[in-house]
Image: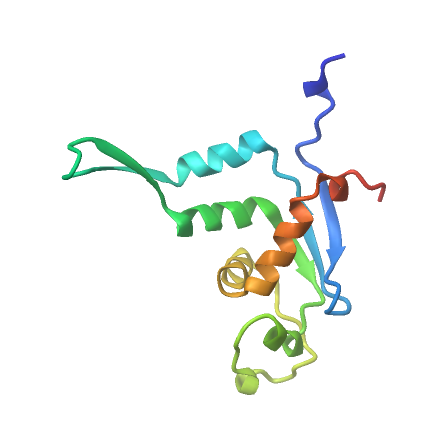
Length: 136
C-alpha cells in the first residue's frame, strides 16, 4: 500500500480554547502541499530596479486570508465578553455580552490578524499533527 493513499487531507477537529469556556473552533488539517499552493498564490513578482531582475515577495495579508479560509471551518461559543481577552474591543455597542459572535470567514480573519493570543493558540494546535490523529 502507498503511504499517499493513507493521508487524510480533510481531517477536521474541534478544539476548545483552554481559557474561554465553551469556545470551540473547528480546524481542518492542511497538508504541506496545499499550504505550499496557498503560499504560491499569495506570491507576487515585482521587477527590482536595483538588481534589474524579477523578485518574488509574499503578500502576507492575502496569505493569511487564504490560510484562514482553509484552516478555520467554524466556531461556537465565542461570547462577546471573551473578546477583550483576545484583542482590544469596544463592547458598548453590543446588546448582550453573553451573546455569541457569529462565525464568518471575515470574523476569523480579523481575529487571526489582530489577536496574537488567538493566532498563537491556533498555531500551536495545527503545529502538532498528533491533534489531528486523536480518535474523536
